[in-house]
Amino acid sequence: MGDAALGAAHETFQEFRNHPPRERGDILRRAYDLITERADDLALLMTIEMGKPVAESKAEITYASNFFRWYAEEAVRIDGRYTVNETGVGRVLTMKQPVGPCVFITPWNFPLAMGTRKIGPAIAAGCTMVVKPASQTPLSMYALAQILVECGVPDGVLNVVTTSSTADVMEPLIRDPRLRKLTFTGSTPVGRALVEQSAQGLLRVSMELGGNAPFLVFDDADLDRAVDGAMLAKMRNIGEACTAANRFIVHESVADEFSRRLAERMGGLKLGRGTDDGVNVGPLIDGRQRDKVAELVADAVDHGGRVLTGGNRGDGDGYFFEPTVLADVPTSARMFREEIFGPVAPVTTFSTDDQALALANDTEYGLVAYAFTRDLARAVRVAEGLETGMVGINQGVVSNPAAPFGGVKASGFGREGGAEGIEEYLETKYVGLAL
Ligand code: NAP
Image 1: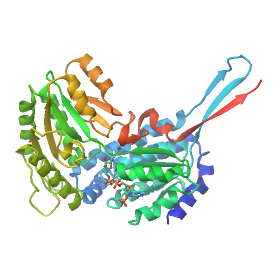
Image 2: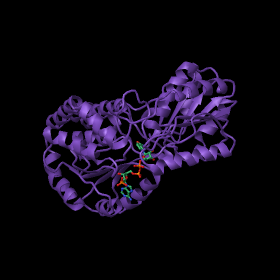
Image 3: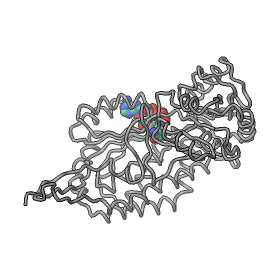
Image 4: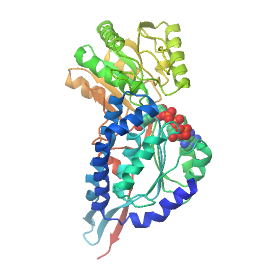
């Protein structure tokens, strides 16, 4: 099946690369409209697939569809440049051309948005593709593919492959000489293995990998705003987000007050089935993930962390874990090095700005960081000093179709969204003109 899918992407590429840009954009724009029209059905499907509350699924659908609207507008703005040679004699002409057939591998935590962030710019650029969604959430991707077909995407341009023999099906595709680009969103260990496989074909590669986001609260921060930001940065997607705040690093003079307020808000959240009214926090994706969260909490408590709220598996038939705040967690605890991927907020303290930055950067990851301060000079200094691809200043969410999303260090490379996002699907060709 994988071979047939790549064969179709390869065969249709020559035609699709010349498909008029306006028509490529119109496919995306129509798909944006149809996703919006079907948002309720798509949200229900997503909640049934991965557990988050329906309101959060709807928010993801809005976020996901906005990549199509954004790249509908970019399809007609792909250009090059024209320069007179330094000598004044010849000319330099550059043109942007689609990279070629692509493979996209996406995770279960944002089943739609991690697809549209790749499919949108790829269609806009004139690339064809094979998309492999996570085994746990294939249905949202099928629903999206159906929408794109209804909106006029030509046969063979978008090919969805589902499998539970993932490595066996995907490795031959990644090593296939017909492929030109690999884009992966998922865990860092799998990303490393895929980069090795992609070396064979010297593919263009984008890697959106794991995170370990620091959330810094300085002594001059607006604490109401910091707690609101913390709730978003921690609890969006039940904590199962690469951008989730993983380590709360709070100035010692405000740590008690911040932790108390955060625990009050977290303790007030309603845990339950994502389809039930009034539920704020759904179940985790599976038993393995819930066991990992429980282990990390037990380890933090063994290291001296104090439970302010939560700390246990939730009641009921589902992989629930209580929203949890832990104070006084030493940085030797495992959760300061590993992605928690659950609703747990560990708090540690700092006394100087230099110490805060050193703690924030003390991780192999570098996806996103959040900082709360009212001092503009400090905000700029901290933003410049953080070893991450993205920084949220006084805000707990950075995801935005108009902005370049991506990481550094073990969080990967490449950017999705904004003007940078379409560049990942374009090659620059230079033509020297002798006059
Ligand atoms: P994962 O285990 O790495 O899986 C992600 C995708 O890779 C799935 O489609 C999976 O397929 C596939 N896969 C697994 N092993 C593979 C192999 N050997 N060859 C080819 N494909 C393979 O990650 P996850 O647990 O689903 O997702 C959570 C991770 O994604 C976290 O680390 C999170 O931080 C990261 N993430 C990063 C971003 C970002 O933009 N930086 C965004 C969201 C999530 P199967 O499902 O069939 O195993």
